[in-house]
Length: 234
Image (cartoon, rainbow, N blue to C red; front, side, top):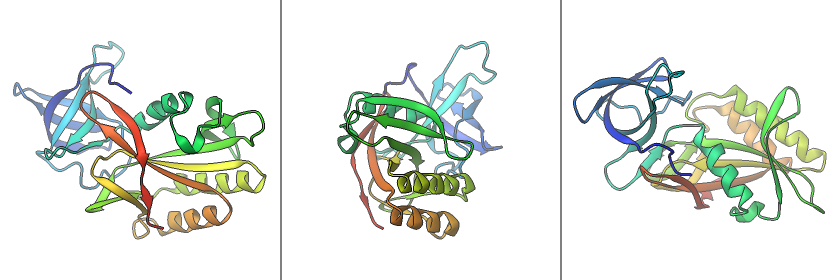
């Protein structure tokens, strides 16, 4: 997925109220950008960090910049926009580029299921059980090379795991797909100390037959795209 508008570099001043970030552009201007990430963004929102923003001229948008990337200035990037994974993955699923799901020929997004829930993707193909695919954006890294989810307590995430387990029990394929929006990780694990309830739901879902897929990403200030699989630790 290419960014529709060229990104511009900036330095983070502060992130606040979850969805706002004050930044300094290269020309010295201070602006407020929209931060499309409800999580804690642990380790990613330190003042002075280099970021990449997407400008817009949409008169309907109050904020004229959106925060898209953290530049670690060592050749690695983290994508912080939690809406990006679904957009990038839809294109990859429709092109049948994700090996574990390549047999599915039809992709539908945001389909109602379970108890007042919506699945990110419902995949179907002749001769195969429908696949219910829930996507999670992963940005937390506390140990070198290890990506973790979640970065804060997520009751909603635990609910999704329960819904997937129910679909697996009904004979459907249920898939939890973690997209790691970092280029500096090669392993994945659940952050059990941050949210023990989520960790328990994760373990129960796997025992119930929910498949866990974990993919890395290729990230640059020009684009974000799913990459190869990462190794789950547990």
